[in-house]
Image 1 (tube, rainbow, N blue to C red):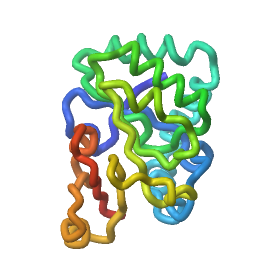
Image 2: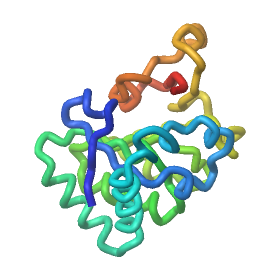
Image 3: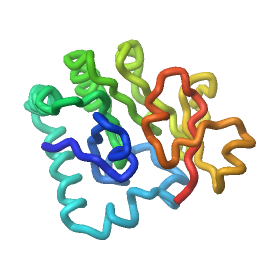
Image 4: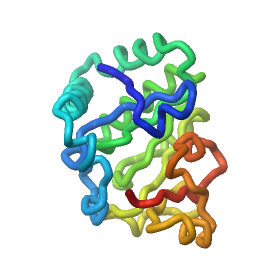
Length: 189
């Protein structure tokens, strides 16, 4: 079990990431599968990365996941935020409830995530003061996205993103984690 840092997360001091295998843990993925950055590049090129994501997934299946993750987060000095998944998604309700329990146990750490799993009950997670769920376009349930709440949209270029009134979070993911920033824009890569 290991939190890590991807290139974007590494730019933000105190931020960590929990990745899962892309695709296989994304039950409501839709058109996003065609341009998913986590299904190409370093995510698939290196067997160590793929193995690490698979190990993380296997950890989530065990009954010791929640207490071990809490301990792991608390052992990280200066851990201020955890992005739940730079690859993968919430694959079922129990897994979402596990992260809700983790966030409750670590009130000084901010937890945020992008998700297409809008079929799950997010009420408990969303009521915590240290969490942020970002609804992500490109899935099977885009019709359920509440555009008055945090959501992410992929754009072809920066000009289109800015014209639509979105905050560019393409190179600095810490902006997406900030409560109050609802229109999160990402440039396709």
